[in-house]
Length: 390
Ligand SMILES: *[C@@H]1O[C@H](CO)[C@@H](O)[C@H](O)[C@H]1NC(C)=O
Ligand SMILES: *[C@@H]1O[C@H](CO)[C@@H](O)[C@H](O)[C@H]1NC(C)=O
Ligand SMILES: *[C@@H]1O[C@H](CO)[C@@H](O)[C@H](O)[C@H]1NC(C)=O
Ligand SMILES: *[C@@H]1O[C@H](CO)[C@@H](O)[C@H](O)[C@H]1NC(C)=O
Ligand SMILES: *[C@@H]1O[C@H](CO)[C@@H](O)[C@H](O)[C@H]1NC(C)=O
Image 1: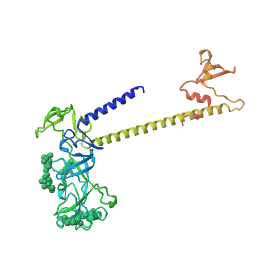
Image 2: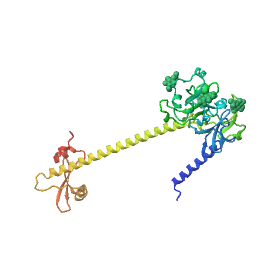
Image 3: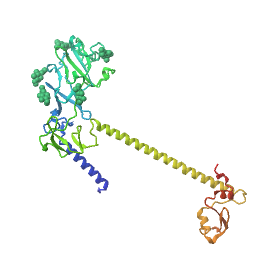
């Protein structure tokens, strides 16, 4: 195929895109199996941000808690959230398999916490748990849940309670223990009005704090857009973006100021741009169509008026019936009068000039020529008063 200018444009775009991904992949970790590992999550010391360590084990991403590990079922980098697969029950008991580890316990020094979108149910609880800010009433959702198949093992246990995670007490743990409750289940974004068979799959949603600039020892650790400098507050050296660029914590790069760096704002800004663009585009389209319709109507009106005029002229001219009148085209008249030559001019009156003309069939005619702008004279002359404005 010939390299037309357009093809070359595409080529440039493709090259730019691959260059961008190249720069980007310096910091982003490679895929784990088929799963992408978004920045700042890190599976290796050479990629991502080391405060956001997770593990890649035989193609499965693993989230390590203080004393246990859970598989990661999904990651959403745009809102900094991931979902882990919580523990199941020990066979034939109402005791969670991570009971020995006291349930899910996050290291509160790390930038991860449990989101408020988790509805947590605790089962096989001792009476003392009622003191806590939990809903342990018999109308609580957990009683509905144990009526189903999955947690039927917990149906006969003494007490169960439900609460929404995310408060300060549950930001870093979902606790099971001998003196409290011995099993748990968590559902993300649960609408408490839904019937149990419409509930989503169980999971625990964890969010991460947007990352600061990456830590560095020297300029070698930073890219061309940033310089390795100590922070004034804590003295930690980080790759700070150069003047004119701003840290983009979602992509982990320095991007143009005025671009989108606001937390979670990228997609929002894109959306706003899209809406504005669409609105303008549609308005322009509507405007163009309206103008086209108006022009078409005007054109039609003029054509109709012209046709009406022609018909009327014919009627007037054929009034005596003896001789049917004929309408001439301006070309024919021009030819007959030798293009209104001075030689043919035989007179001039209030309404305009009169020429002598000779038609193709040899008939000699007088051609009256109305003065431009002298409509009144023209109407008088031809009785065409239907054209007079009302
Ligand atoms: C509830 O917990 C207690 C104490 O750990 C345990 O002995 C009991 O078997 C549990 N109930 C069920 C139904 O598993
Ligand atoms: C968790 O692990 C730490 C050491 O890594 C240990 O001291 C602690 O007892 C463990 N806790 C539980 C509940 O397993
Ligand atoms: C929690 O994380 C901090 C920061 O990475 C680390 O220094 C500390 O050892 C961790 N605590 C435990 C108990 O693993
Ligand atoms: C407990 O939850 C049920 C069902 O969602 C609700 O009807 C009830 O009012 C709650 N009770 C308390 C004390 O919050
Ligand atoms: C959990 O982390 C988010 C940021 O990712 C933060 O806004 C929120 O305050 C934290 N919640 C708690 C209870 O620390």
